[in-house]
Image (tube, rainbow, N blue to C red; front, side, top):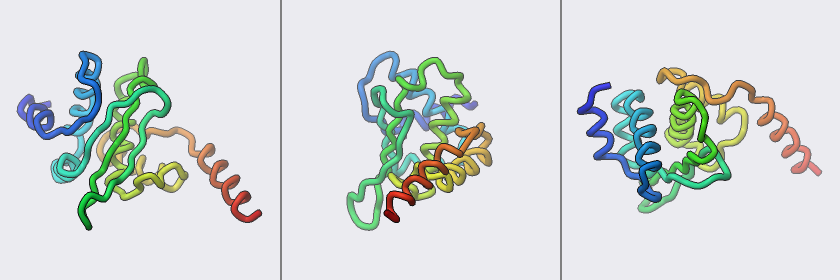
Length: 151
């Protein structure tokens, strides 16, 4: 990757979280991920997205916040504690996957198999590994949710 591209992304990247040596490593993982995304898409992400480096509990989660209509500020929560020890391609795919959810407008509605497959389809086009190998857990969750709703 070009050093100038990485420097530009680093300059434009908005991250919220503790600034430690460890979070600097996490920041670089986000930069590496964004460098792989097509430029026009990357610019949209950098314009309207804040990445939040968080503690243990979830791998990642995208959500939207309306600041001024109709502009939406995208917040992506990334839990590097849960990703600790995972191979770099898995970490990059997770970051790309959550970014794809945000770009696709899934916001907090992700978590169903259709949304997960759409996000994985997009990151695969960008050159990342699919984040999920099995969507059956989402299908089971959807089936149980439908049963609860119909009762």
